[in-house]
Length: 388
Image (cartoon, rainbow, N blue to C red; front, side, top):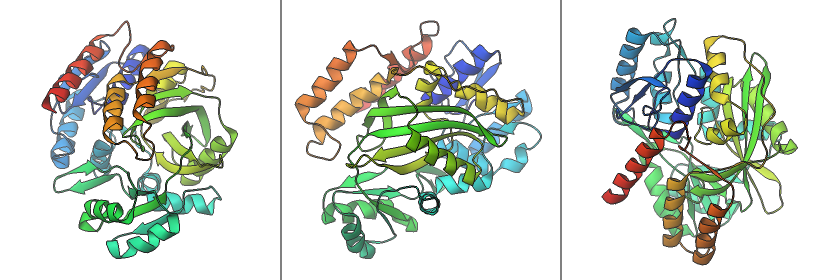
């Protein structure tokens, strides 16, 4: 069973597992999602969204486990993972949740723990100061410099019965920092104030199980929405960078982070990589890994099911994958936020957007033998655009 049918990575997972020979059911907040529209989906259900009612979501998943007895249940969104983490015992012996051990998850979802561990291992991180209120802000900005990045320690924050995701924001001056800090420190949330880095965004994806690595993959993100560091909308597979792989593997083995992980870095003006975060779940960028030859969803299934995990290390270099809906949003955001860090000039933005249609590129959602998900995703994009 694959949860979070609205997510791009859920569609990739359904397609991979279906082609692997498994019967795959999809659960989402809506019945007709890109993942549930795939020809590889054999059952679909809709129910509570963990963002609005985590307890109701968990109960719904529990009911589906009772009915269908899925060997493995895969969550691909922060909200569903947080909901299931709190209820692991109720699923024990009934379905294998494709989640890393609790101690490992704690070390990755809390960025202050991740930063501290990286420092202990001698892995470079951006200059960072943790603050909880505006009184600590001036000294933090002095330490890291401007522009600066305000990043919540935990991206997913529980709120009432549900929760929401908080993204990093870039600030140009002290007034902006004070304003944005107030928004993300509600209920005493800690925030990391970090230096802004101007270099390339690169990531290493790994599958670690049974004390060794079974797969490695690397990519570079050319554009993201929001531009500072949201979801990648154009990325390319690259050869494994030695400095990134070494740092990533030391982090994963030290944490004991079994299953899939995506370790994200950004290079500074000096070309040295700094650790940004560790993502312990299948992310949307897994699409490019699968298309390049590393089938992480199948490996995650094998690991979670207790089966022998295969080895996949060879992949196509130079493969480009584009999320067109996200790229259109990137273009709109770019036009509205001229002069901000990571935002190119209007003419450059248009030139990048248009010329990338001329380069060989694959597109998220689009697979010739399974086109219904692309149609559903296009419908959802247009409806959202009409709503403003």
